[in-house]
Length: 319
Image 1 (cartoon, rainbow, N blue to C red):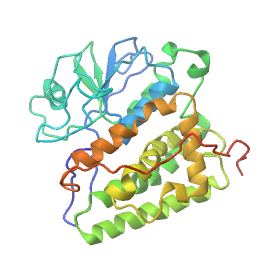
Image 2 (cartoon, rainbow, N blue to C red):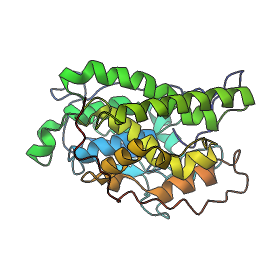
Image 3 (spheres, helix red, strand yellow):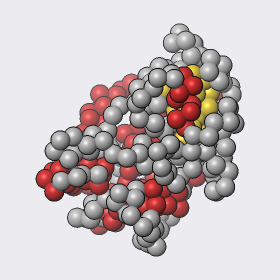
């Protein structure tokens, strides 16, 4: 998602489209897509918060050897969009069909495709098609469909969408997604003052709401880490480095929210999570690729943040 030229309405408001490929991988294959070892391939970007949700889920569930990944070039310039390269750290050429651009993957499935070319993309090598390009749904597939293949019993038992919390998780996602996950884009990609004011107002009202929740609860739905936390984390970890300056979301920084800053550090320090975060990819991508916001592509040198500092949330008990 990150890096595409923004879609705005007549008011100058950013509008994020849903993914257009919405099929599912299931453990038993009843969906037509059975969970299997090395059948699926994830095209992603370390720069994009939506693609990174899937990367976090894959890491937590120990699926690195089951679902290989290809990271597109984090510099996205020109009409062709996301491209493949082996000239930048952690990026690689397309190992499936040797495509030059991600759009070639979409056009392989539908030569008449005219929608947005976004990451993530979950590709099925067996049938030669895109299963899904909707990050929230790919995250849920990784959470449960591939349990047979998890690296350890501990990872197999991780459930980011437990039955007893689903209503609560869905409720949190309903306001976090439009107001925070998409809210940073509504502020950053606004083309009128009115649209910017409205976007940034909603963003910080809801960040204040998160801070209040985290003053009483260790995580968004209580004392259990869930999908809702994964989805918020990938936005928060980019906030002070790119959204504050690049997207003019500078009313407050995450470090100015004591509970949210501790929460962000705690998640970052969970086993494997930091492996899914690459601030160089993030800052280079946003500030070099978005030439309509930063014409000279100059990348800011800061801020200095210590995500590994003590977070102090170990003994917080949910109210």
